[in-house]
Image (tube, rainbow, N blue to C red; front, top):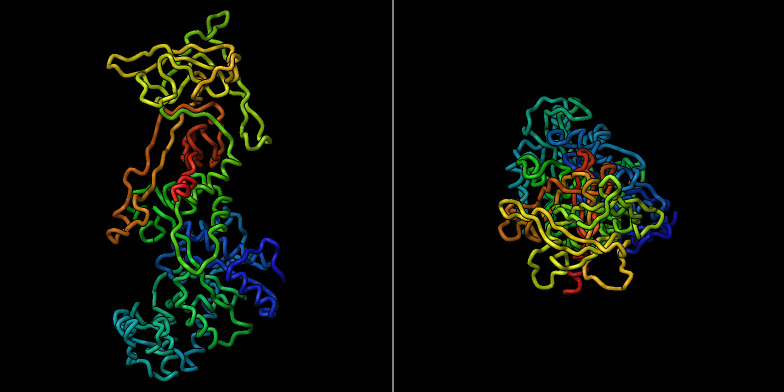
Length: 561
């Protein structure tokens, strides 16, 4: 097979091209995405998904999803279902959904093979002792006193472990490699631990469970993976990956593991343990809270899957970890939404504007006009809509100043502004309540300026959005700031949660939005004109989450150099 024209240029694709030219794997390319189902996928996983599926697609190969379900204590069917759903949302379809637990029988048979070959042994040492035996990066490890058991004794003990005879932690199976190896991963790593726990798929069928290192490469081989792509923290595991495969009776050529830089963002954490703490401590509303970096959270906030894919592709595949600015990611989101999101008008902090010279009909009721407005100027195919206009409007409270500060060009007494797509209006006076709080602005309009243009060519310095008061729909809007105040959470104190922003969400009730927004589809993202992009909550009607603002912060950062 040869790669499609979309194939990019990076060291992994170059390696695969060489393999294909040399006939390795018969020109076949197969990858896999192997998450552990112990939590929800986050933005870091998105980079791996785009890489694994994208490379397979570029070379006309296939990519499978493998749930690395080797720890019964932390894994749940809920997480399995969410992973499958998130991958589909990103736009990928696995060639097959597999589970490491599918291979428990084969893995155990291969473990017996290594024991009989004198390459694995049962160790009675506890976890603390085994850790101490491994030594340090500067000192060699120490051999276990159980290392020289005979293959026959080890096989008997392993089978008794398998049958559930021993309690948790009583014994482990270790590979017999080299306790003086410069790579600590090669210092007799653990292959099996005793766990008397029910597995979400296999129930109580097993009392021993494989470690990641024992299950990973062997699962790759069973599935026919050719190129096993991992993040850089697994680079030191590669010699062990190769050692296991080299000592097993494989029916086909062994897969190759290669590592690439993972994706990290500023103002963001991706530690599952700490993300779980945010959820369990009630700091966020759940794994799909729009402030969370989980794919569920990004989706609820309105981040388009296409933008996430484009960002991951632009980051590319490198050998060096780096932290990307979250503003750069948001620029991809903004670019995609500018192209696809329909426009609507909404007022978040409403102030009543009454046009005192607005006409009335024969019955004395205010006349209602309608203006034709483009749904998305970037996409004429989105068509137009009719927006009602009346003599009573809602405007943003900060669009009016009774005593305007310097360089304030919006509405103030005696000043004329343009109402978006409608008329020129001039503020005349204000109405206040008994406590002196502003509750209404009165204004006059110029009938000749219909459509937002003056026939005499006079200019105004501000255009404001509005919503017709009699036709408005009430809504609740959630505004978000960074969940973490520091660019690198925890850099100062060593604890990421020390930089938590306790004011990361502002919930505005009583917002006024145009009537069309009452029909917003769950999850639909629209642009609130002048305010940003907002996503309709999938569960709560007329609740909108701000996805991103309109200002391109990444462009500003680049200009500052």
